[in-house]
Image 1 (cartoon, rainbow, N blue to C red):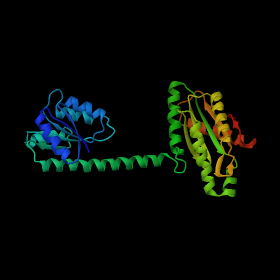
Image 2: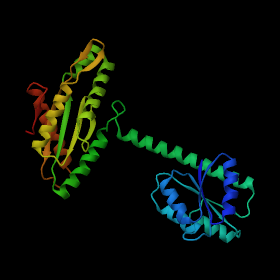
Image 3: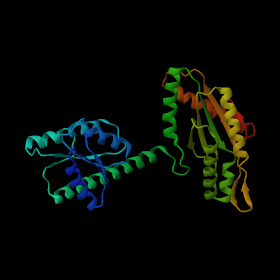
Amino acid sequence: MRIVIADDEAIARLLLRTMLTAAGHEVLEADDGETAWHILQQEDVALLITDWYMPRLDGISLIQRIRAAANARYIYTILLSAQDSKDDIIAGLNQGADDYLTKPFHPGELHARVMIGARILALETSLREARDGFAYQASHDPLTGLFNRLALSNHVRAELARCQRSQQPLALAVLDVDHFKQFNDRYGHLVGDQVLCHLAKQLTAAIRPYDWLGRWGGEEFLVVLTNTSLAEALIVAERLRLHIADNPLRIAEEVALSVSVSIGVACDAAPEDKEDAAIHLFQQADAALYEAKRLGRNRVHPPL
């Protein structure tokens, strides 16, 4: 584990470094709180052991600064001090320290408290990873890895509100795989899944960096085109359609499946701050999609 030790006494730092490196830890040293703070900003460090009284920035102020910062990961802090009264210990813990160690300390006690910190940090990492995993599952389609319908709906509503403030247009493109049922009927559902994943990959490669892409449901995909007029959205949609048509899915050495899509486009040139704006935009894009399919598929259609 990487540990920062902050103490203005060189002998104290030497003692700490010797004990910690002997236990297998990597140690970074600072002779005052300000130096320790800069190290923490530049290095990936899990644990801080800091003296209370130091020049420039004392240990309590250093800990308070850490707690106020939006660090990507939690930094476990152990406060060192020669003050061993209950009031001092309580004061240190109340200011954000995770643990308190009085000088002079026993090597075994130092090791035990560092191990407590390591266990808490491991638990915090596990909880954070679990939280991130649940958040990802809640917002992504499990088959394609794209955003799911809920995430897309929330994003469109947020974009409509932003576009309403900035008076910028917002466009949607709904894509549907042409004759998707035939892929399932002829080759099986596993190949049908491959078609969807292939389409997700091709669309991801073809959309603009600032556009949002997700699986709208079944064989339908949605592209959210921010700050895009209807004319621009139709150009983008046609480029996506051609890209899909030009990149068949190879399912065997001698078998390549031609995949095409129908696309319906809708645009709100002056988004209004109303509850049903997103629903209306979705309905417009959906109606345009069905018109594209009615007219023969493998085409882009503007709003009706």
